[in-house]
Length: 337
Image 1 (cartoon, one colour):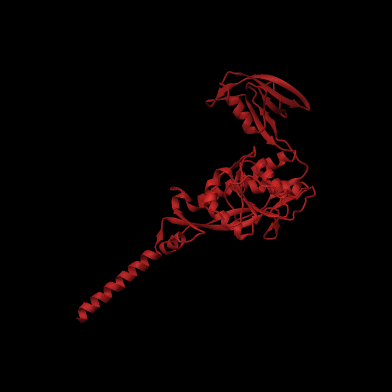
Image 2 (tube, rainbow, N blue to C red):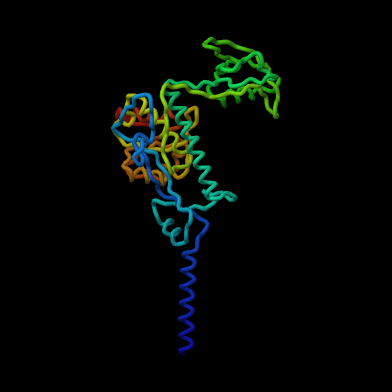
């Protein structure tokens, strides 16, 4: 009997040890939770998030808060179990955040690059809205290219076949829209005088080209800088654009409210979908937000994960976001998800 009892005891102990081992062994999942929120009109670690030098800025009674998602990259079973039962967290396969073949460091660096690009796009679209248009300027002309002797360094390209050139990318797209060998009417401004020229595109590297290098410029009489560390990804673009506009115009976009939000933004002002909307809504609620700007393509997910007394304002562009805030300030009812 003593031997039998010892066997049962050892078996129970072994089972317990195995269970503990399973619970503390890392598994191929990550836990997503609410990350920090940052007021783009305020400071972070004592430094202004949006810095303007050379022009007075306005102050706001409210806040424009970008939202983030916290990622716990190393997860053990007991942590995952807790996450599965949490209303504020999500447990997702690791490859959704860290794709196979990429290290954690590589993903971090890509997120940092996306963050920098989002800042640039936010500046571009905000300054355009404030009356500082984009100019596409000829930087160099190939001596043996189609535009040689026609376009000059310093020319501002304004149109192709009557269609306005609004960005460097739009010029490239308009040239590539016609097959190589097409005659293109290029509108330009040279030393303040408008003109047109006919240029026949030529195939190079398998694509139609006209033989010019270009710069995209947006002259403005002040310097603008976004200073925010330890944030990655492109989803802060919308809130940065709104923050820049709020600081550079007298009108207070917030109406004294705490407005949180998320969304990518492109140079034309389009607002794109992001990930982690449930966790961002939780973070916004914890920050005391009065309303949340949701990219149109995230509305269905946001509606499935509502936070009490947090209106979800549907936006597909910067203009729609500005309209939603204006309606909110006037006591109206913005378009909801």
